[in-house]
Image (cartoon, helix red, strand yellow):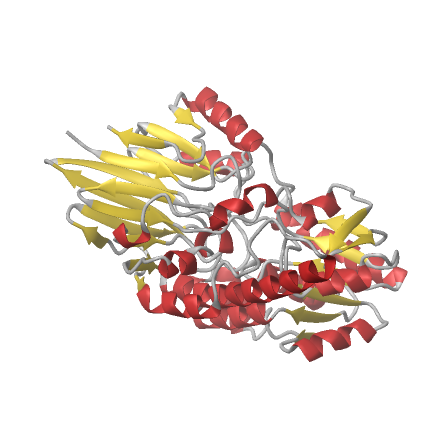
Length: 469
């Protein structure tokens, strides 16, 4: 009899904190170990892990976004010494992201402690960092890389294979095959499913057969706007900003989104559809990640390879400036002409974007352009939902800048693309677990999937433990 237990330790009825525990054959492993970013769930970052970290044999990492890898230093800090298995590109990018996250954790803790002392109050979370730079550095030697489509043994009777997810550079879907007593069971963890016919990356992988699926549903209740309109939308926003005489401030994820923005700006410049816009990538992390992109040409799609062949790289176009130091960043405040400033974080939860919001969000000639998903409880979500003011660095700032959004940038599959991903299955899975989506989106997609296919589906709650037959 097959005896496999699956526990949903994160990304349940929410879009961050991805973490799944698999127990089989005396082995305990995690798929992802992500940070919660929604305010309502952030307390979970501080809670003890549901399994002692020293009992874990491995972590299988789908990709380098913080909501999938961001609790790894805490796991190591509390005793984990196993392997962290992922693709080479994911390992390179995760190193950058974890060190940056640890630095922000330290800085935010120091800032909050100073502010709370000044205000004579205690904050909701400890005035210590969740983890430190030293904790992040201790995590790095545990990485063990594997290429796409090459099976890797996790332990007796447990094998994992990483497949291209088409979401961000190096991102993976993981197929876990567990053998017990002459029987086999397979589980596909979708990670974040990418989209088809997008710039830079290859399309997502398909699967023909699997017993169980744990899949994301970030946009499971809606369809994206036509991605072909991204260039048109971006050109319109840039040209309107020149007419208004203001800056364009872009909160952006450092991984994939920043690179895609540069890709489209490069194309618009080549096609002469926008003026000679100066673009400042004000994110040391995005700059480092862009350098990683340059090392992995083999992961690019054909269009991107042709741009590189024609010496029209989106990472080196005329007018692009990489802003690395804090001093260089501060000089952007004095610029009066129309420029674009791309800075992290993508949901305005930290990083240099907060300083640019302080200096630009209350000026009506400026444009605040959102190009990514804004989770509930984040400052970015408040702004796009129409808040008249937003709290930044402890002070409420009036929102007077023009707010613009381009939805087509999303690196997550929408409802129909999720169904497309499932369409290649030649046999019905035993069960599909819907995760990594806000409660409404997950439940709507679960019902939609069951109606269209007859598959058994469910939306697990936080801490749900199931035995896989």
